[in-house]
Length: 323
Ligand SMILES: C[S@@+](CC[C@H](N)C(=O)[O-])C[C@H]1O[C@@H](n2cnc3c(N)ncnc32)[C@H](O)[C@@H]1O
Image (cartoon, rainbow, N blue to C red; front, top):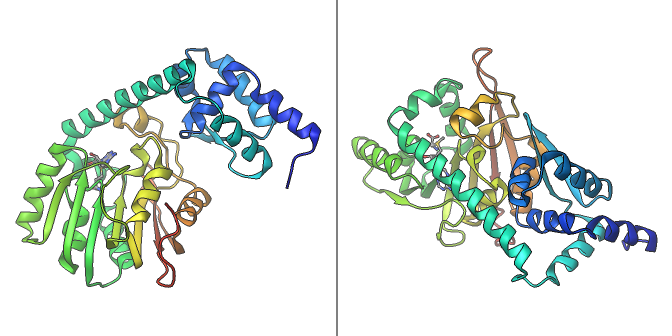
């Protein structure tokens, strides 16, 4: 549906201010927290929040709180979105202000990636212990086994494989298995673990979940276990994971339900405090997967977290539609 002339004026008025245009250009790249926008724009939080409020009122951005942080993303529907997309596409990508913003955003991510990398390197040896502080390992493992089904699997891919727990759990039912992780320390531990488990067909590779370089539709089981909450853009990681799922294959994502343990951000590098069901359902559907099933595993005690397991499949009838 088209906009009325008045609505078009409102949209253009909201976008027609230098800082707000920069915010729109940044959010066109990925969802961002207010504090991240403040750093890139080099403006105070009240100022950036005022701009965001105006953009939200004009329906150009959506706000979603996550613990004590508030994230924003572009509203991806309707004629206003089409107008903004067109507007942004007409701006020279080499424009010095937008280019500098993109560089600053990159610097913010590099800093975060370094801190997360350092955290995983430091905690690799203690990882199994840290994980079991908040969730019951045995219950999660049972639920993952059930979600995966009995196999056999032709090719299992574990993205963000850490110390290799998913590989030792599901690898015995796979002809070939691959674990991909950014941390060399984690990869080393995983290598020892899969060797001890006698998993000869299991390979461990250094790689990034955002760009796995694995071929389309190359795995019949893809697992992303407790990785998404660390990531800058979890929706992009879900899309990349879904891309490699073969027709008839499955993607299993295990992560937390929304929670309020803010210290996990400060002390354990979490970026998102869990994921609401509708958000994950939308990402999976947008990535071309269907038959979504969700299992909820409540914590064993009050200090724990609810773990969710999302399982979705790629239909056999049609080939991949998400690019
Ligand atoms: C919390 S650990 C989970 C490991 C394992 N899946 C498990 O459940 O035990 C998260 C892992 O994700 C990895 N990781 C973080 N960002 C990544 C990225 N962009 N690409 C690949 N791995 C990543 C970390 O190095 C770490 O090993």
